[in-house]
Image (cartoon, rainbow, N blue to C red; front, side, top):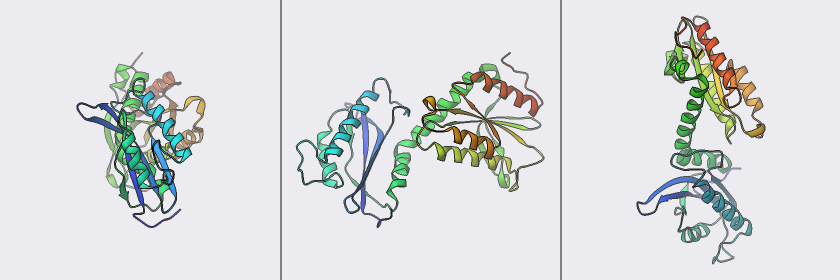
Length: 283
């Protein structure tokens, strides 16, 4: 779908943590165009974590609001609203703003240049909500990896960088540099947008291997391990992404929730192969 620029509007959903101190956190976006008769909403999901948002105490408010919003959008009408006003109009969202006075709020509609709304709503969500989401998610995965490794082994690998393509540094979640480098990365394959995250990770590993060349460096090959989070019962269909990371990224991919012991053993083997072996071990 392609439309003229500036024919779209968007609004930001915020969850109010403390009304007295005016503290609220962005939890979603809406994007629409009356001209293109297009509308979509992206709210934080139950399996996504945001800083300062508790899924136990705050999540139910967000979930109830999403259900209510879906009902209003399906009916095409808001309480006390005019039937002639469509959800794809700014007027509909201005009326919604007046209705939301408790835990959930929505901003005033704002104009935005938009050519491919199906893709750009995800970019908008990442820009407004996802930056903090990604930071928190990386910290969570790194913490889970540390738990799998144990405190002693985890100290052998620290956040750092390796020289990659054109000798430019590549930031790594955890790295050990011996005769060879062992890199340990993490990714959540259970979330929406997992394919993009997997591609970004593969690209990072390929750059890390291409030390000053378009090919993998033969002088100091990298041993790569990826700890990943999977969706419950693989419902996100991420098995092919795990295979892609292993094949294109030349990495060993391990489920951090279900294969914690294997992650520890693979890391120990990698450190032994990298040499000289660190003195610290979990056993």
